[in-house]
Amino acid sequence: MDRRKFLKGGAAAAAALSAGRALAGMGWSQGRPAAGSRVVILGAGMAGLSAAHELVNHGFNVLILEGRTRPGGRVYTLREPFSDGLHAEAGAVFSPANHEHTMHFAQLCGMKLHSVPPRDLFLASWVRSRMVRLDQSALDFGGLTPEERRLGFGGMLERYFYSAVNELTDPISLGWPPPALKKYDDMSFADLLRSRGASSAAVELLSAGYLSMWGDGVEKVSALGLLRDGWFGRNDFLCQIEGGNDRLPHAMAKLLPAGTIRYGARVIRIERAPGAVSAVYEQDGSRHRIAADHMVCTLPFGVLRDLEVTPPFSPPKHKIIREMPYTSVALVYLQTRRRYWKEKQIGFWMGTDTPLMTVIDASYKQPGTRGILEAYVTGQQARALTAMSPEQRVDSVRRHMQQVLPGIDAEFETGASKTWDDDEFTRGDYCWYKVGQSAEIMRTVAVPEGRVHFAGDHTSAMPGWMNGALGSGRRAALEIQRSAA
Ligand SMILES: Cc1cc2nc3c(=O)[nH]c(=O)nc-3n(C[C@H](O)[C@H](O)[C@H](O)COP(=O)(O)OP(=O)(O)OC[C@H]3O[C@@H](n4cnc5c(N)ncnc54)[C@H](O)[C@@H]3O)c2cc1C
Image 1 (cartoon, rainbow, N blue to C red):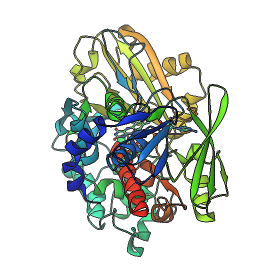
Image 2: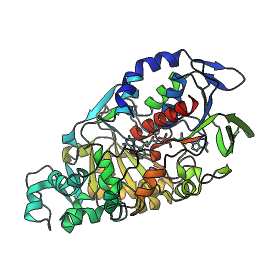
Image 3: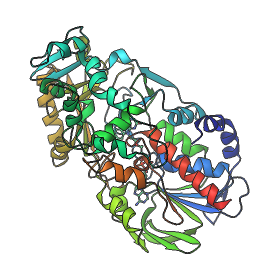
Image 4: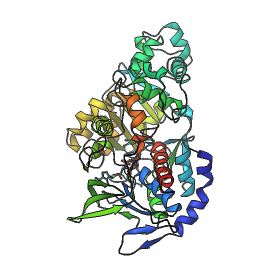
């Protein structure tokens, strides 16, 4: 993919998009005159929106079918029940500054960004019932070797993780991963750390928080999946959109010609035929069918596996759709009268070995006195929270928070939660790979099935990132442009 060209194309895309108009009655929106090609896109998340931008810009007639009543999918900002205009992210939290597709669209849509500087990441962890400062020259954590204490948290990451990342070739290249990397698919992330000399105390400390956010944790996740994530760069400056990340998909949707997105349209079947492809969907209690020359399917596989597809996709694709695991994520927010935790200097987030997993200062850089502490919980602990009532989730997180950051009981005002396993339009959060599973999926996940093209973060080299979703939408659009040429 030619990223530089994509960035340059931004201004032209904006002009072309604003010139678009709706075709009343037909439900197709038209950009510049196309060679009669109609593309139906399933889903108005970042992948669907990006594909639509690219296709409309190249004169295709585009219709997006979106089950929800809003764009953005897993980019979702909560503003209720918080006071003083505070908000918290229930989906994408931040974008590293080197994520070119996200930055491109943020710029195109005139978004203002604020950033979390690297010094506010990995300042402290809460492990073995105490605060461990990670920003000190010698780590104070029992069981580390003298060399590990000297290396510190960042030094251990370099030695045990990034040294293996350096062995990777460009994950965007065709046919990746090469056979030489299979060994990393056959080991868990924790095994990788151990195989490079990490002591058990080092594994314990490194895996509290951020590195446990994939799937069911470091003992289960394929090392190759995390190494590929690491290849795209260390999380330096993390950017957030002022006013909430969901402002970006809303702005992207607005730039499309009127009528491009049909909201409340839940797709229930995909029908494939020689020379055409159709989507059957339900809207306002009735059933509709729309035929197109091409389809971009951005639906998460947790949803797609329950759709009827006639005739079925090829056996390898069917297998991946059925088996791809998705990370369970539960987020619980506690609004407080004061940001009483600031004096503890935990920075933007803090990993823990408690059921809270990662604690995030969700009000970081938002003005005001009140604040929001968030528990970002994944895997088995997230499934336990999902099974609770919303009130029980808040109570449970409050209880654990009182141990980790004492004072919450006195400062607490109101709580909220979002769980992704029970979201009917996602069925889980971002995908992950079990040991031994990633190489096969990575090679075949994005391959089209006739006129059905696949996009979505899960089809990209950066699953779990807006950047992966946006890039995949553009890649699917390019596939269609090539096949329509
Ligand atoms: C808790 C959490 C934290 C995250 N953190 C980050 C982060 O810090 N940084 C980052 O860059 N990314 C992050 N992500 C990932 C990022 O949000 C996703 O990678 C990206 O938004 C995925 O976009 P998508 O278009 O591929 O999928 P989606 O956003 O899931 O879009 C798919 C769309 O399809 C629609 N749909 C589903 N089923 C149907 C149906 N049957 N009919 C019609 N429409 C349907 C959905 O409503 C949705 O709008 C996070 C995600 C979550 C949930």
